Length: 595
Image (cartoon, rainbow, N blue to C red):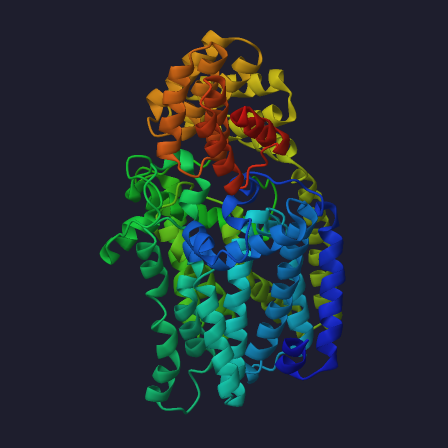
C-alpha cells in the first residue's frame, strides 16, 4: 500500500481505491471466465516461451520490447497454466490501478502552479470522477478483457506512474519521487512501444503545468534530459532483436522466419517498427486514412457505440477526398485550439495535446490495421480529464450538484455499456460473430470464426466460414491459413483430394507458411505417401524450428517407417517445446527399441 499512502497523504485515497476496485470488478465480473481469443492463442496457448519464468533468455527472444508483458504471462502460466481466471484477474487489477493513477494525476496537476490559480473545486472530487471515467468507459474493454492487450494497459501503468511521480517530485522537490519516475519510465520502455512517447509527455507536463514557475530554464532542461536519453531504448532493442518483438510472435503466417538472433542495423529501426509491407498498405495511404481514423476515435470517445474488434475501415487514397480533408481540418483546428489554450486553460490544452501525442506512434508508423480500440486506452487519460474539467467549467460554478449528477449519469451509462460489451468477449465464436455483423465484407472475422468452430469440432460451420472467407478474397495471401485450415477440415471429413488441393494453394500463396506443410504432410501420411509426408515435415521444421506439433507428426511418420530412434528424438523435442506427448507412447517406443 506504499504508493497509495505516499502520493497524497490522505486516508481518503484508500477509500477511493476501494470504490474503484469494487466498481471495476463489478463491470468486468462477466469476463473472468472468458476464453482466450485472437492473439491470445499465439501469445499464451501455443507459446512455449512462457512455460518457464526463469528462462529469461527465451522470454527475451520471444517478446523483446515487450519483455515485461512476457514476464507477466509467464507468471500467470506458472500459477495457473491455461486457466483464464488468473489472466483476467491480472488485467482487471492493472486497469483498476491505472484508474487510481488517473485520480492521483488529476489531483496533482490541479495543484500545479499553472492550474492552482484557476480556483477549481475540490481536486479529489474532480480526480475521482476522472478516474471513474477512465475505469468505466466501454472503449477500455479491448485493452482489459482481451488478455494479450495487457501490453497496452501495463505500458499505461508505467507511463502514468512515471508522470504521477514526476509531478510529485516537481511539487515537493523530491529526489526520491524523481527517481521512481525515471525507474517507471525505464520499465515502460520494455513493455510496449507506445512508451516511446513518454519523454515528450513529461515535457508536455512541464510545459503546460510548470511553465509559469520562476525556475531557470537550464534546471528544467536537466530534469527532462534523463527521460529523453531513454528514447533510443525501444528502437535499439528492436534492432538488436532482429526486429522480432511481438509482431513476429503473433503473426508467423505473414512474416518469413529467420533467426531470432539475426542482427539488424540500428538505422533500419523505422522500417522495423513500420510493421507491414509497403505493398499491402502504402505509407501514404496509411497516413491519409489516419486523418479519418483520428476523427473516428474522437467520435468513439463521446459516443462509444457499434464497437468492433475488426473494423472494415475504408482507405483514403487522396487528400482531395472530402472526408479526408474535412477530417484534416477538424484535427488541425483541434490542435491549434490546444496550443492556444495552454496559458488560459492548461488542463484542457494538456488533454487535447495528449490525444495527439499518445496516438502518434501508432498513427504515424504504418500498422497492418488502420484502427483498433485498444489504441485509445492511453489517450483515454486525456479524455477523462477533459470531460470532467469541461463539465466542471460549464456547470460546476453555477450548480455543483448538477455537475455531479451529469458526471454520475455519464459514468453509469458507461458502466452499463462496458458490462454489455464484455458479453461479446465470452469466447471466439461470440466475438467474431459480432465482428461479422459489423464487418460483413471483411476477411478475418470469417476465417477466425471458422477456426473457432474447427477447434470446437463443428466442422460444417467451420467449412461454411472458410468458404465465405475464400469467396471474398480467393487470391489474398492473408487467406493462406484459411486454405490450410479448410484443408484440415476436408481431411477430417475424409475428402483428401480437396484437402490436398487446398494445401497446395496455401503453399502457392505463401511458400514459407510452415503450418501448410505440416497439414499437407498429414494428408500424405493418410494416403500412405510417407516419403512425401516426411519431406513436408522437414520443410515445416526448417521454416519454424519451434513447431512442436510438426515434431510430433514427424515422429509418427518415423515410427511408421520403423525409424524408432528418430521418432523418439522428435517426441522428446516436442516435449521440450511444451507439447504434452503421451508418456505411454514414449514407453511403448522405448520397449520397441529394446526388442
